[in-house]
Length: 417
Ligand SMILES: O=P(O)(O)OC[C@H](O)CO
Image 1 (cartoon, rainbow, N blue to C red):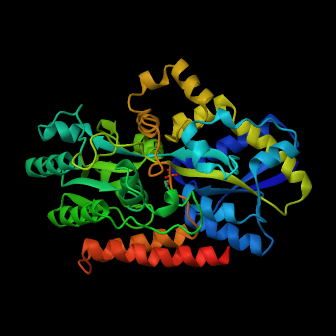
Image 2: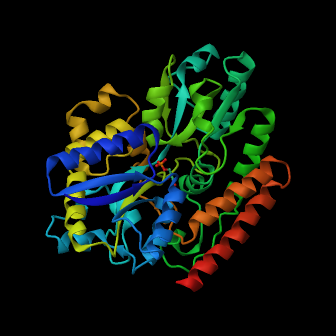
Image 3: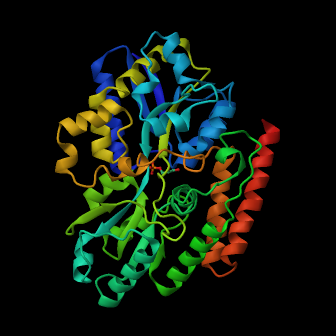
């Protein structure tokens, strides 16, 4: 069989499941063998794939997180657009199968989806129902607003039910990018970067500054515990050990929550918002990743890639992956299959992400973001957030600095492309 490398960034429960999916495809035919290779975090996987391409060592398939989309789209000589691949290899391709927010996020200016949607997510809030009960809070009523997150956290701590109110993974994705989308604030000019490489960041607005300032104050009071840079790997254990009562992370944290949050009941809720800024928050934006096909591999591999991509779109494969991991059902058929199976009734909260993502028609501010060099910008966000938490900068200084340094990255990318 022709071997086809699939570089990916899925560790833990979801990584094991991804390997099963590859095995499922390999067992379904004998011409091709998909070989999954774990390359570390999303930024390590993307950086590694770019280096490999330059060295002519690239895999046929690489999983790239949503914020790497701008970089991949600009790398025209390196990527083989999925719609083109499927056409060339005679495989069926119908973009209307995918849910609208996914198509919107991954289409080029002509409306073509360039990479295969595979694992789209959106951030949600997980909370410990037992701790809520112990603190005298209603376990069926999670906080809706940031004011409630603050007051519930204080109640929880004062009652001794838990040591910390809340933690969060991904300060960049959840507490900065999604924060602005939910409140209908532009993240940059040019429709959050969808309108061109000459976009400039503008998210150093009152909302971001106020929120970062609150996070610093809440940290100092002990209500909030920082989960660490990049994805915030320290956040999940603080929730599993019942140290923090609430926890914001990707909907795809679900599999690990189910596996690790032992001995207490978990509730699922939408992300909180500031109700004096917006009465009803907009949709959250998607995260997770898509599968990009890279050029320059032997011709026979591409037929196998196309067949594998057809396999991944099967409703039963997609629904199984979604239900196991917490990634969204990214095709309408996979969502419907789950409904017909009674999955959402049997698993309350499993559809929080999809509902939050599709609750309104997205505006230019909530459709997503698209920038080059965004791996670097995420690094700058983490740097400046650390400076804020360490008391070296005020929230305004930190956020202004992210925007100034981030804009340098955008200008570098613009001149190189
Ligand atoms: O944890 P994931 O896979 O849902 O991804 C989270 C963010 O989208 C990464 O940018």
